[in-house]
Length: 202
Image (cartoon, one colour):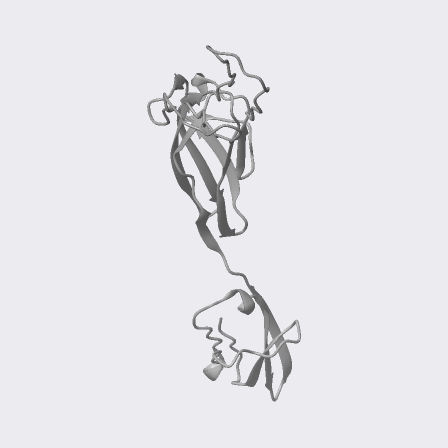
């Protein structure tokens, strides 16, 4: 900003909020120079000029602006059928960013940084985008959602075919098949007679 009058006056600068000018600010020759402008430099500044004919002042407000930048991006998700997905994206900007969600290029309902999908179905799979924007620009975060459906599979967590335990002892047999949605586990005793009822935890 430049403060100019004729005949040449003496002049000074001040912040109208009463805070002192930062030491980095240069006010020589009627010019207000603020290097490395930061949030704390936002203010209304007043140039006060005085010469033999009187006194006058001019004010100008300085505001900072910033393009959106991501604090939290989306990451690809592999989620089981019927589970719930919660996706969050977060951006900073000046003014504050607004959000929009897209699935395969088509807009979705949420207008904030959180997308929640309950009871996931295979049709929910696709490419999702979170868009953060303000009047100075837009940024995109992309991620792929894969909804997984599979029958119970014991190949990665097989159950031992034979387990040995001493009389009166305790044994733990783990039943953890991979399945999507989560499998319902039931136990059956196929042969022999048990004198005591086994304790089964699912």
